[in-house]
Image (cartoon, rainbow, N blue to C red; front, side):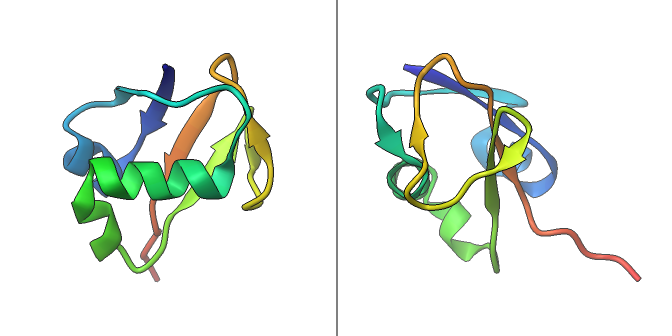
Amino acid sequence: MGKVLTFGIAKEITGGGVVDVPFENGITAGGLRTLLQSTYPRLKELKSFALAVNGEYAVADQLINDTDEIAIIPPVSGG
């Protein structure tokens, strides 16, 4: 079980600023992204979103542990 920080529209979709997500140590960022979209189907509606692990943008094959700080970074709009 790991904690995932959420911001902006992702916070609205998940219903909180921090959500518990059941995953095993060693899951990849891509696997976690898929798990999040399965758990919170409205995330699939976002044009895009990124995952950050320990303050750095994650690549799909990056391994994640439940002690890592994970955040969903929603798309940003503005002008």
